[in-house]
Image 1 (tube, helix red, strand yellow):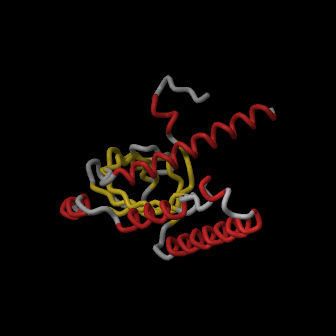
Image 2 (tube, helix red, strand yellow; image 1 turned 120 degrees about the vertical axis):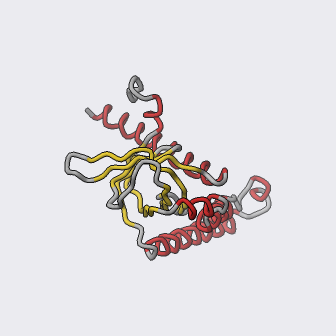
Image 3 (cartoon, rainbow, N blue to C red; image 1 turned 90 degrees about the vertical axis):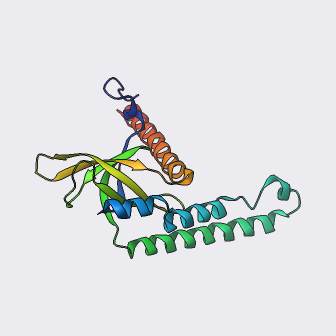
Length: 192
């Protein structure tokens, strides 16, 4: 169990390598974007809804013979894989770079080569490694800027969500990764 004496949110923070891009934007552009949900966030949400729907619900189980059901499951898995690969290729064309990120539902911290100051508006694109991969376009505010020991600027960002889907998608990813980390720690402790 992680130590929670210093920061209760620590339980829900994960360190991960995520393809991402950060962009300093003006206050005017921030205000415009704040009123419009990012196209990638909308597309990702729609795609996850489509891919996540179970074609083989309990209603159909009794009506399909097992050979046909297995063939359809196989086809469904292959189509989901192709959709995921297509999204990965699309994201790579947008110059997202894999970066170490400390991520929570409310914000993130990461190293950036851009000149941020406390209070700077920021536009972030994350591709969450899930199936299918999910790209989120998020707005945020830089809460702090610190230099690491090697003088690289580390920034802390608070997310400003424009719709429930953005927050829900990020929360599901963070909680899933947190569970994975706990399982891995438990397995390592058992092996030691």
